[in-house]
Amino acid sequence: MELENFPGLPPFPGNMLVMDLDRLSLAKLLDHDDEECRRFYLACEKIGFFYLDMRSQKDGQSILSYADKLFRVSEQLFSLKVEEKGKYDFSEKNSFFGYKPLGSYVIDSRGNTDREEFYDVSRDDLLGHAHALPQPEVVNEELEVFKSFASSTHSVIVTPLLDLLNEHLQLPPSTLANLHRIDRPSGDMVRLTRCPPQPVEDKAARLGEHTDFGSITVLFNRLGGLQVLVPGTDAQWKWIKPIPGHCIVNLGDTLVKFTNGLLRSNIHRVVASPGEQAECIRYSLGYFSRPDHNAVLKRLDSPAIPALPAGIVEEDFTTRDWLVRRALSRRVNLRNGVSSSALDYAKHSGTEKISRRVKA
Image 1 (cartoon, rainbow, N blue to C red):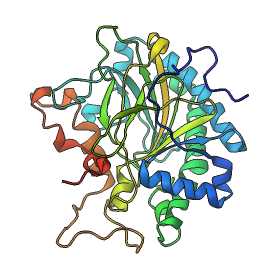
Image 2 (tube, rainbow, N blue to C red; image 1 turned 90 degrees about the vertical axis):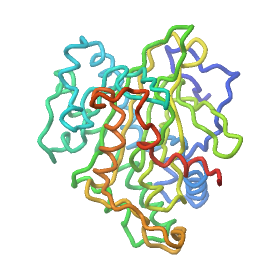
Image 3 (cartoon, rainbow, N blue to C red; image 1 turned 45 degrees about the vertical axis):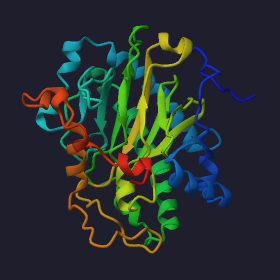
């Protein structure tokens, strides 16, 4: 019988409004199974989220094993004293890697701040493509696990999915993969996240509604909390239930820009876990894939990609510009005296308006 909950953790409640995401097989996608590929393309265009079953593919099983180890690293890392973790907050050096404390991000137009802490490790640092930032000892001791997780996730999941999309979009061979080469500087990273339980009387969002900055996010979590906003005029929030043996994959803003809105980067948020799970600390693990720093985020030339409206000229900015704007613009400590409530929240948004698909 297939496990639907994680051993040792409270079950996900059965009475929640859950998003019925496609469960796609990594093994079948790697084998270019026609029906599985059709479902994949449809998921990328309609909602931009899907489950990926890793269990029947050898490399997928290895990634699950690395993920298990990194969940244990998370518990050790976030148990460090606040002062120790704070040594690795590099935001004032214009870096989006390292430690982010609780309450560092403005998450809505009212100036409310987030309720989670996370730690980001640069893939370029792990693979020796950049001058590595200092890391806590607990991270240094497990660098090989971080490296294996990052390189395997990129080569086994990200690149094959990009190649499938490349074919579907009728682009020249390897166009998307060449924009996401593992040997070129990028904002790719491994993220460890910790969300503490919240008071019963104050269950505000842990991370406000947003779209992801990059191209493909590969997420592992074990407790509920992630919600997606169903597109359309009658939009409502639905839960994404974590499933053992599966990761959750979602597309980000850069694929929306490359395809002029054909692919979707769906709005999502993190709230308090439901039911008995609300009493637990929620850990999650993600691999965030972004194009090369110097890639220009514009519509790619293909008959399968919608043309730009007449007279529209796209902004000329790189992935690096986009990431810095999105990742650092809402950091409370970088507001230069501007209060959180006075921040022009919408100005620093991503592709949310396109994601909603509501015509004016």
